Image (cartoon, rainbow, N blue to C red; front, side, top):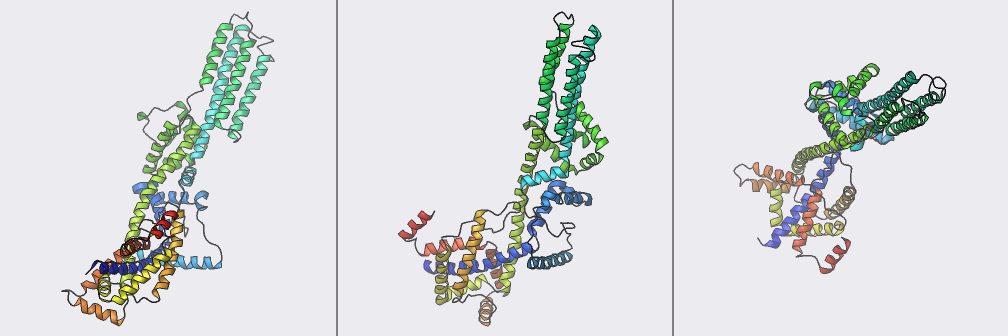
Length: 516
């Protein structure tokens, strides 16, 4: 058997694989769409991510269901509108219900019939923190921080002014009821209240409110220092105290961290951690004002608690303030989700590969695509071999310039949106399919359950010790080949035809280089 004959047999075989793999790819995509494999796999992956080994417990499944019911996640579940689309969806839902009854599997979507097949990492992060009410926790910590900073600073100023009044008595100018300093102090209280209320009302950020409070306090201290007369024998003592307070205000104070509060709420062992008094005060405030928030966080799955604390610690090391810590936590959660979905996508691809093998084998059996029989027919039938080689060359010349080279698996990732190359591939595969259909009009493929095919197969099987083993092996080889995907076989077909032609013509090579 010479090399040209082997190459022509390979071309014919690959051409058949290309045709059938187009069919199996469409079947797999249809099944995946109807049974919502991508959305279901994504939901199970998120359940595992959030609950770990406790994913089968009903209380934790309810928590994941609440996460999926958040407005941000629901907004990603787009469905076509119109009578035809709704009719198709009802049929698909009926098929899904029947499939679950046969396989005795649960509806991972809960009360819903569908769910998103892709969730952006940033959306997941924001939706999860909203479900946990960590934004409310962050707001509560920030409010207590601003209020305590205001109250402690005002109390320190009152103590200084009271000590000065006790030492000197009422001074019509700087001390006593109705004095200038007393009026300035009352004005200061009003201004600081406005600063705190601006933050609580969402009109200013925490850092802006704290800076404004610090500026007002510093201005009052400077004015108070100027009002003290030089003859005042307590001048130096009071001024030193005011200077000390001013420096303390400039340094501000240690804010309670989100990590500390989470550890306290999650009942982490306090002996292993040093908590600031402010963190305990925040938790006491939450126990009084928002017990449901504390309960939600305290009863989270253990794996999620551990992961949240770890991510919060990472966020704290990269942040300079409480506001930055919360924003950094959102980014850390998004990165955590993204890394997990990369692993989940690998699992999905492996599972889809197994399904592709099964579909490929079933297609091979149903249409009697026996690889061993096809090789035998192509090696004996010169007319068939020549016809299929010409059809393969026509298909390649029609679609080769536009078909992109992608991995041999046509399964898309669960957590990765369809990219531009993938959309181009779908368009190009449509062109391949049209070209193949046109070429098949005059090509008698060596497949099918016709009488002639079955007679030849039975005759060839008699030389085997177990005759039935020969077609089973042939179908299995075909099934494995079809699972490789149509893109893979089109690329192989192009390479084999190029080998047969002993390279492209100079003008074709130059044209391809210009296109690239």
